[in-house]
Length: 230
Image (tube, rainbow, N blue to C red; front, side):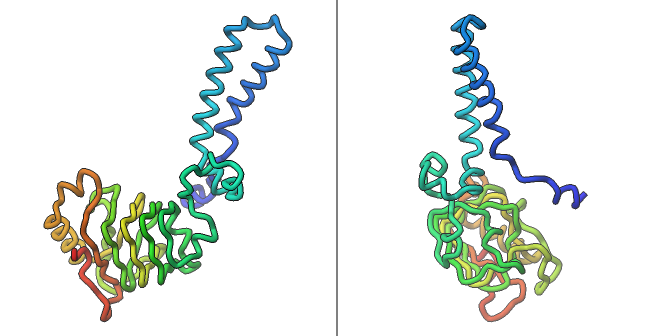
């Protein structure tokens, strides 16, 4: 099962836009030849194909930006908001207002350290495991707390395959498809603190105006209570 999942190729950039392009080419050919199809049929096919092409191009825009980042300088449509982070930007210790997969910043052994992320959109899949000071200020979640937390049995456990954070600060970041590792006690304390801050608001739009200090699983002098709001 895992081998099959690993062998799945990444989404194609060309497949979504190829059918409407071929239809447009055929439509143009019939128009040039003439007297093959009524003009209104050619016009209808052209309109439908162009709509299809525009929708497909919008859908694959992020794939194009990641596959050929240099196109953003020549074709603003690829990244009109300038939010997709480039490789150079991802190497910075301070990243603001960008969108990227958090796992892309991890080292070969899964570590992210000495980084600050502000007003960013962070994509998964992934699970964040704090092994050092990790500060999450005014986070915006896209899932309920009970669906975001992965429980480990005891402090000091380091789950294999997680994204390990140390000396990392998140400011007003949006977490999409990302979870957090914690012990049973720390997760319960998180729920209690979220309830104090107003769980109804968190349940509706996934946001909180509080700050979360994530407890490093390895313990230490900088350990804070997971979910303690300042």
